[in-house]
Image (cartoon, rainbow, N blue to C red; front, side, top):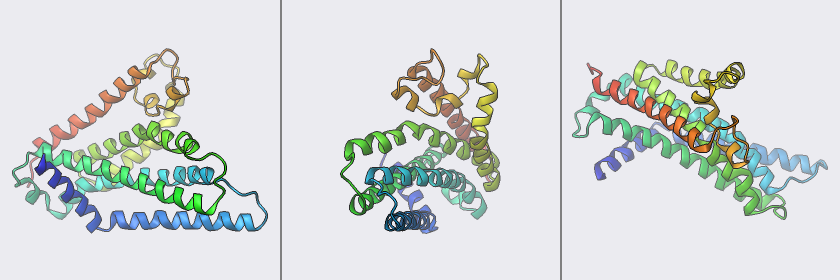
Length: 254
């Protein structure tokens, strides 16, 4: 476990050393600063003052979209850069198995995504509670309106991370793996509209990526339980993971 932790730490250092994570955090802070500036300007012009919780929810929802794209990029790049830079050979001569190396990369991506989201949530909430009206709502409303929805929709973000990660292992192409995940994400809603009346639709992954309907007591498909959704989701994630591991273990590294 200690060696696996060292691998994860090494992958984290790679992401930060290439300035991907620092630059992205700076970008998010610029977005936040611009949003605060616009809201303060609107209020100076006579617009009604926004509540701190409402502001936090809106900004976090916007930045989560950017983070979803960022996560797809790093999920692809963490694999393809090893082949492009030729560092995959040095990586594979380590005593760790190929599966362990691959899993350390995947865990690093998930940790980065969670770190970015929570860091942005904390910074946004602090700024909002200092600058805007905090008399309405409070922590309970922040939990109900922002934090809980994030956890309930996190499976969606993780699924497309796995798609990009698997595509990168299969193709070793940064552009192609990013495109596959982004296009699938973009077309998922439209595709669901065409097949949602089919009896086998409930066996596809798309209606099981958002778990918020279960919290509201309104399952995405009539008669489907949360346990069923979780099981279908887990099967698709496991399938992507197994494909990545099998291909990476068998791949001949020249």
